[in-house]
Length: 400
Ligand code: PLP
Image 1 (cartoon, rainbow, N blue to C red):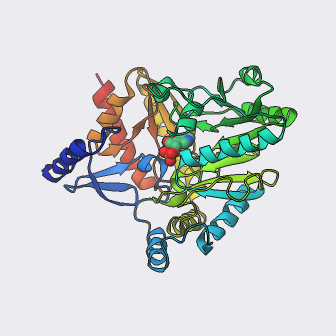
Image 2 (image 1 turned 45 degrees about the vertical axis):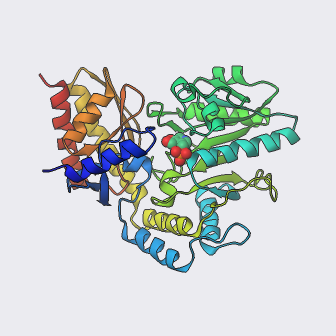
Image 3 (image 1 turned 90 degrees about the horizontal axis):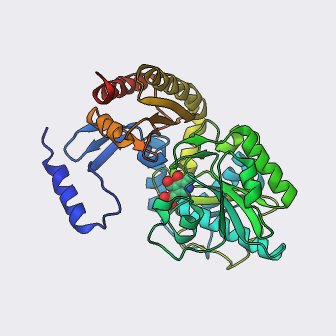
């Protein structure tokens, strides 16, 4: 098959777009779990566009919601209110059960910035505190504050001076959290499953311990649900699977069904910390993105996708475990629901490239972990095909 059109697009991209990414596929369209490149080659997308296309590409209800809202109103500013954003706020509060309020923005980093700002605003009024404890191998975004919150050298290098006010602890290690807390600490920010840092789930004891510490020391517990939210791990928000309730959580990625949309959700205690003009975002609560998000939520509900994640996630994990049992160079499968990591004794990128060669797109999560984030609508038949592709790719890399 020719790759002429793809090459033309990739050449122009390399000449004119700043080289922060190094793509090798020019995607032209998508349907369900499949994307097609500009020359018609198709791939199973087990990245979901990095966790975004939870209900699959080109979902009819999401597409129709976008089309009809775009025809009615694309933007009106936050000097006015639009019905889709209020409906979405009410729904997020209901699904979370936290009884609070929502601030809308456009991305995960921006949602985490909002959480950090809210924590500081409350902390200054409650004991002059501003410091946020975050975790090694965590990931919270690429703005300066969220890079400072992301305790990974590759993310921070070259961007000094970073904003101050962050202290780092070890994930799943409560003593390390206790050691990082000072009189200045106002909040603890963490992922329930660390995504970019290697697909590492928190233990239930750890998250419960963090909750208890926050209660004892009057700290705000913030969970970053940017990658885990909207059903990825089998519950609407990953923290719901651990028997804890945060004070604040953030979501983005899958929320907008492919359109930029981020949200900070609070409990009742922190619902009115932001006051008029204290924070803002021009496009926050955009009616088209909010209409798409409302449609994403109804599709997850109506199509029983949370149940599907539990069922298909278990099957995928079982298949990956069988490869771990087969190849010495595969060390472990970990993760939750349809957020799974295959730990490699070697270069994860080599496996990701071999998977792409078989027609399946996956991600790395650090140098040694292959990350699978398929759409939540993945069916059992498609999973069988995918497992065959994974088997062939692993055979190419690790077979005799
Ligand atoms: N937080 C987590 C846990 C993420 O995985 C990401 C992105 O991968 C972000 C924040 C940043 O989100 P965005 O790229 O939408 O700013």
